[in-house]
Length: 72
Image (cartoon, rainbow, N blue to C red; front, side, top):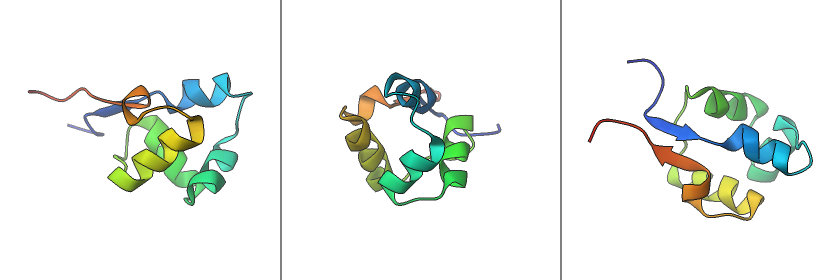
């Protein structure tokens, strides 16, 4: 299996927030733009801390950004 079973709505949330750039989100969360790119592409699962940072940046709960799509 490629990628991670953790799906996300980061791209949608960025565009709903005035077309926030990947770099702006990265800066707000203390990571690189490449990390945001990998997250959006589903190639990287965030740490719990990063998941909370991203959710807080958007002003939503973690489950509004990330969801588990793996096998039970």
